[in-house]
Length: 393
Image (cartoon, rainbow, N blue to C red; front, side, top):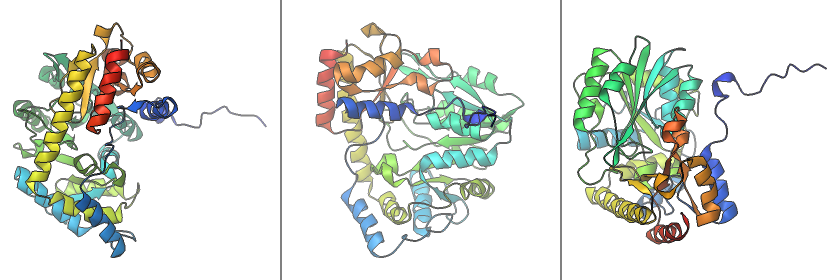
């Protein structure tokens, strides 16, 4: 029998292998290193939210398929959250869709809204699923790179405007931004909104870190700007805000026509998911403001602890205005290859980090940068800092 030697993986996904997160998490296990690579907390979220999930299980709510758009209680809670925090009014029945986490929401949006060959402008570095989902949808990604400037990463609005062509269908935004920790300012968002209206572009905006903004930063949904309500799909998630990342409960809010389009794709992905957890997240979104304030303050203290420790260890530190990641520059330590540095770090220092280059199309632009997560217990961060101070160089 003659083999055609055709590869099993299709061309659209050929550039995507096993994620760096799987590789580095495996290294953490084999070396016993502290895992500051993957962005998941090492403690559970609020006890009352966990108990709400247990109660839903015991009461038989969500043990079978939940409604396709999501349980009514959660859709109502999402709409109330958007109204309460941002003054955005959404109809829970026609303008909210529950997804299996934000990652499915991203995939469903791109699969639904793109035609093959459509260009998607995205802010680089970007969460790794963006590139894969654009590829699966047959789109072409056009990165606009956030560049280091005065201790942070900044967007060049002129570069963004120049990236938009007649083939551009969609802007894919992420603010607060993973991995850099940048929070787009009101002025930047206003300029992006004007561009989207002028060029008649759709906007998909990943706002899963909306409750993790620090110091003077402010999270402003781009859907609040003139002309944006009808052309924006906003993605939210419970995992980052309530520290239950394994529950995989996300959602989108958008105008009815956009929700209908995204649901058309979503129903052929998971169809539905996370039944009992949806009821728990509905209760979580109604927690008093004191919860969100305390959560943010705790993460800010952990950011400060890790950022200071990394600086003391000799890293160049880009202090994040949001998320729970710190991006560092390894060149002050005498290194320039983030991949090699991160693969050696578990053995040398007993700590795992992620090379930022995996988030770039232009790998060379991200080569000297390494990301650490600070969504861990204080004692764990203190031990990681101690190890890095003695071993990272």
